[in-house]
Image (cartoon, helix red, strand yellow):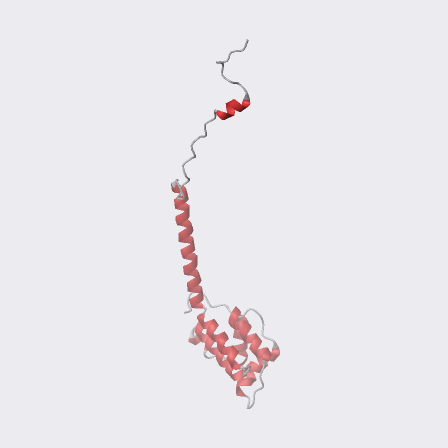
Length: 160
């Protein structure tokens, strides 16, 4: 004997009686804890400081960019390259330290402040080219001058 009023216990009838739960509330995009807000603030401050530092470095190296542009227009002329190197050195070091240098003292200064020693052909062209009657273009001098302009280290503290 089967009861007709008894609840159905088969799987399909139980599935038909299921009620869908309500969807959860949307997740807010703003962080809910103060730690994330503090971290976001620190990241913004660090990014602002990094941008400020990059701007300072770019402004400090403006004389290098100008010297490299002049060097590209010099066409290998030793007299022009010598003048460009002298102006570049005067932009980075005090006048009293650079202006009186000549001859081997000048090339020694360039070697001491640059990243690499000056090869003999470039140093010879630098010393004799500006006073020669018809100086020949010197690709070695141009390449070495460009390397020095890019890589020289400015003095710390007392310089400009």
